[in-house]
Structure formats: C-alpha cells, structure tokens
Length: 281
Image 1 (cartoon, helix red, strand yellow):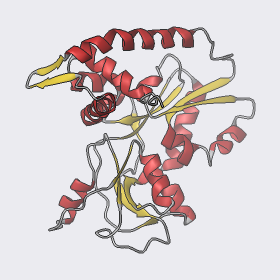
Image 2: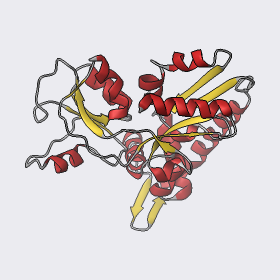
Image 3: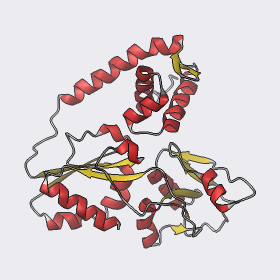
C-alpha cells in the first residue's frame, strides 16, 4: 500500500526554509515561531526518511535530497497559487471579510457572531480561518486575527487580552497535574517547562500529547484526554459554560497571543474590531 501524502504545510515550511536557508527567516515569513518551523522540518525528514538540511552555526545547507526536492515543491506551490487565483472571492459590496485563526473562529466568534450581524442586518460576513497566519493578506481581509508575537503580527495590531496560559481539564477529570496526561501546543514559546519554573516544582512535568494549536488542545482537554496548557482567551468560553475547568489558579504570561488588525478606512471593519475587543474584554 502506498504511503499517504505528508501534510502540505510541511512542504510550505520546507520551501520557505530552502529559500532563506534560515529557520528564523522562514518563521518570520510564515508568521510562525522558529521552533515550529524546526519541528515541522524534522517531521518531514522523518516521514521521508532522509535529511533535507545540514544545520550549521550560521545557517542551513541543503543536502542532496533537499536540493532534489526543492524544485518539485516550489513548482507545486506555484501551481496551487495560480489555481487559486483563478477564482474570485466573490462580490465585495456590503461584505466584511474576517481572516482569523481556527481557534478564535471556533471558540470566540462562532457563539457570538450573530450579535454583530444583528447590529448590521444588511452586512454579509465572510469568515476565513486557518492555523497559518500567512494564508491571509491584508489586501484580502478587512479584519485579521492573527496568532504570534508582537514582532510577527505587524505594526498596528492590537493584542486581545487577557490571554495568560492556564491549565485546564474536563470537569470530570480528578487527577492532579503531576499524575494526568499533559497536552501542549507546539510552536509556542512557553509550555509546561515554563509552568514548572513558575511553580518551582522539584519534579519536571512532561507533556505526552502534542498538538498544533490551542484550539485543538482545548478540544482534547474537554474530551478528557488530559490537562492542557492553553491561552485563557480560548478557554474562557468553555470555562464559563462549565464544559471545562481550570485545574490550578495560576496563570503564566505568554510571548505569543492573538492580535487583531483592521483596515482603518473601512467603517464596518472598525466596528467589528471594537465589537471583538469588547467581547473578549
């Protein structure tokens, strides 16, 4: 049986890293952290069974396998981009386009978007969602909610707060933190290691489940898979509904967070930004 295709996002990261020959530069372009880029490259290498880069102190060097892969991946990405450009996003009149991370779309916008629609009954709203920040360009979206650090999200973006990292689990999960499976979102600067340091634990708490977003971490925790360290911004709706519980009162600061940016000349975009900030505050 033929092996399945690796996730296409891994190839996107590989292509960016191959162009820049630096994980940090690729991360800046894609709106990711350097650790997320490094991990996805490692995952692709493990899946393909070859080493794609030589890691040098001053940058990267493509291996023979990496050099063979670059033109095929670059051509495929360009073909996909050309194919996407064949389709128009639809009429722009009386349409507000909001580009947002999957986590924000699912846990914050979905339960409340009807409130904004009721305030603007003639307005059509288009929600575009993804984990990847660079899927949305400011020329397309009227409002963007992007995940990353202040340096990554660009000038003029406002952080949605409060968004400290908290430990959450299902209401029926009674195991203490040091005995429960721990869930961690990869590609973020802070994790259970930083929780350990803030708590002053003598033992090290090691995560055993790894996911690519806080939203998925929240979903696993809600289903009883373990205790997740997640942004309080994403967990708060479920905490309020009693579908999730905070298993420890401590909150630790996070380098990355959710930022909202908007087209200031678009009155409806300004209204949406103000409504969203009021909603999360």
